[in-house]
Amino acid sequence: MKGAAMLAYDYPILGLFWTMLIFFSWLAWIMLVFRVIVDIVVGDMGGLSKAIWAMFVIVVPWLGVLTYLVVNGDAMTERTVAAAERHEAEIRTSLPSVAGNGDTADEIAKFSELHAAGVLTDAEFARQQAKLTGGQPRAHGENVVGAVLDVPGDDQGQAASVRGDAVATDGVDSERLMRIYLEEVVVKGRLELIDELAHPDMVDEANQAFGGPAGRPGLVAHVQGFNRNIENLDLTVERIVANDDSVMAWWSFSGVHAGPWLGRPPTGQPIEVTVFSFFDLLDGRISRYRLWLHAGFDEPVVFDTSRPGT
Image (cartoon, rainbow, N blue to C red; front, top):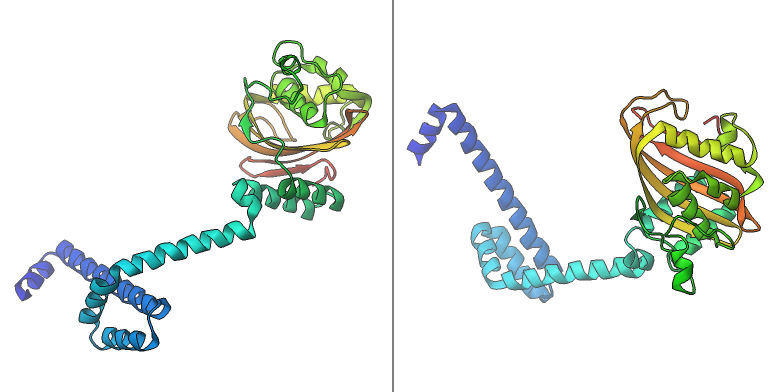
């Protein structure tokens, strides 16, 4: 052994390897001893047995630890698995909505951030939170480029009306209205649908923030500018939460920043953006449109139409 050690120190790289081997062996030993001591303390043995095992491990560590592993190794594994199962059960009990839908906690956190930033009012935040924790989700995340709209209806004819070139917009519910806007108007550029989706004198806060026209023409200009300045659009709807008089969509997109957008000159670089769109509805049509977004430029940009100067 002494000769091996001398050989190691005659060659620096072998000396380094030898030192690392000793260090990691010592670290593994310390972790093993700690694991055994913890198992002795939390195990289901009686007090006298725990005292004997603890004394054995402390006084004669090598022999005590190895003997304990031989005698109680299987029981240690069983206790570890049982503890992990109890921990998982406690999480599922305390957060039932997360157990049912893995992304609900993240969504509530995002809504909380928007509420704290003043984007959502107290009433809006309470309504969205109730939707996520107490009701069934209205829409799951899905890629919508080239997708078939999942439209609720009483018969196949109604669903088919949104799959072809003609999209029926009469009497649509608020969730479907938002989906038609994102999937047909924004993704496919079907600007003619805006006449059916929006009131003539609607207010588009994002368009107004940059001095665009009022009413429906403002929303048309908004979408035209977006599609002109963002190329290779890939849009994903994360969730839609709808009520009779309002609807919110959490969506994200990636694309190429090909034109001036949000006051930033074109970079020609890929960009990823997270958006929260809010429609206020009147008689089933858009009366006000506001949004909050986070754009992943080199210096990230947060744009809130209710506070355009931020």
